[in-house]
Amino acid sequence: MGLGDCYYNLRMTGNAVKNYTKSLELNPDNKKLKKWLEQLLQSEKEESQPNIDTAIQLMNLKKYDEAILELKKVLKNNSNNARVYEELGNCYYNLDKNKEALGYYKKSLEIDGNNNRLKTWLEKIEK
Image (tube, rainbow, N blue to C red):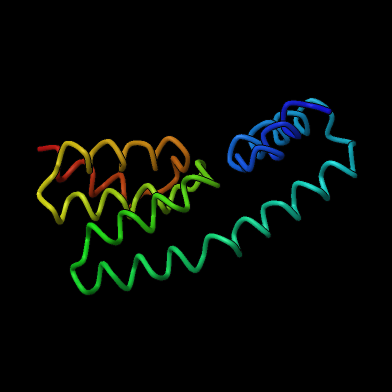
């Protein structure tokens, strides 16, 4: 049993994914691990989507504190979701908690450095 399996058994899916991904980088020919990782990522996406959808609806109703709770539920199982960090940043920004917002925006960019829209937004609000 590897570290990824340990995290998976503890329902720490984000950490499990990171470890499985690293294992796959070290052994790219491991077809069994590649298939398992693909299934895990798909399952993780399907499980977190209802919470993200609920959070977006709450944000549209300006219920940012409730949206934050929904988004943090996603992070418990998937700490590597750039969209969730960005949405948390949006919630905190709308609550005039810019320091917290910046932290979440930066975390989102650490995960997905190709998000040019967020980079532009971050430059704008840091001024």
